[in-house]
Length: 367
Image (cartoon, rainbow, N blue to C red; front, top):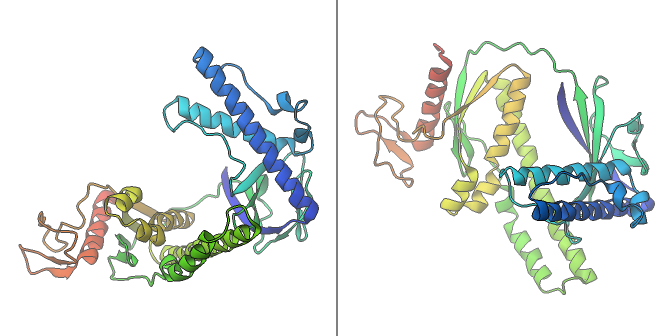
């Protein structure tokens, strides 16, 4: 079985808006109650044997009886996963949810056909007919498993419909061409074929407007109506930047997936890169990790491969012509000038060719 999510814009009416807020408040209440009791139990006994459910708090808090019970059950599972992950040492200590949290959402599950699409509406438990903009069709053989109803800081509503379907039989495509991709901060990537995409840099393009709007926000009184209106304008601009970047990366990854049989890319720690070299804003605006995620599943759908080269592989230091390693290569050296042969080329292009050759070696190809 495989899963795929479809996200659509939603337009709740006044009653649905109120019910959404009530459900989020109920989720926050359940989250904090269960988390508090689990932590108290662990602090007293050193273990957690009892399971705490939302039903325990319904008599004390009538609000929990008015909202979708499956949403509360999902919140309970979320808390349990967070606590168990913390106890196993895989994550930090879970935190209580603040009422001031900007992004609000809840998840409900499909039970006895209680979730379905009818025309331009999505039927949800307790919510009834929710108007949505379905810009793409969900295949008939896809089965709805759950729906996440969320509101962004900009005030826009979206529903994410998670579907389950039988895994298709994908025949691996014979590899006839391999292309290597080297990470490039200003251009997203440089391919071994010499291709450089035209990265729009949506964040950099909007910095002046963003700064102007944030200056106006800083002069307002926190909590006032004008402050909330201006904060929503700032959030809308951030959302526009994020969605524009995502659209560009989707189109770029689709173009690559349709033209190559196998792609190779280096494995990088983007968090480490942004922190160690103080390139946080540039790394965030680039979207390299998201591009690789999109490219990987698009290639897999066509029976193609994305091969990730080990992080320790010195793609930038190796000469793509003779194989000699240049140990004194600096980050500021943008042209690779080999001391062993006459190879002089762009540093990123040389690295992309090395990544391509490494992928060919890893797969044992003879191209």
